[in-house]
Image 1 (spheres, rainbow, N blue to C red):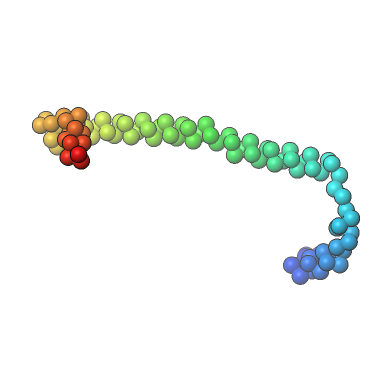
Image 2: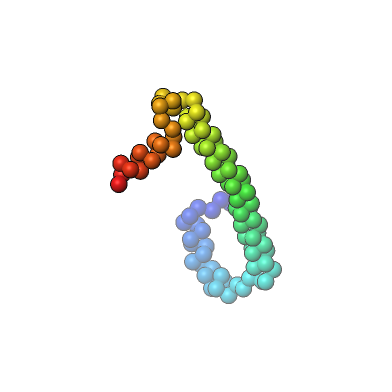
Length: 93
């Protein structure tokens, strides 16, 4: 028998007293808490992977800045990257 929302609500209302009297045993609580802790371990276990993604992203970022500065920048023979940063800082002051 499939239970629809209305049938389930009717069943709960009809047997409300039995639900109020029912006391779950301790085993149920222990089983629930063990399943809950296993799920949290799965969530926490992704942290090393996130750290690896961060490190790889940082390496790619630094490599792209180095490649841009060494090979792609049009004025690389006229002014150094350090001088360019100093000029930007002086313009902001």
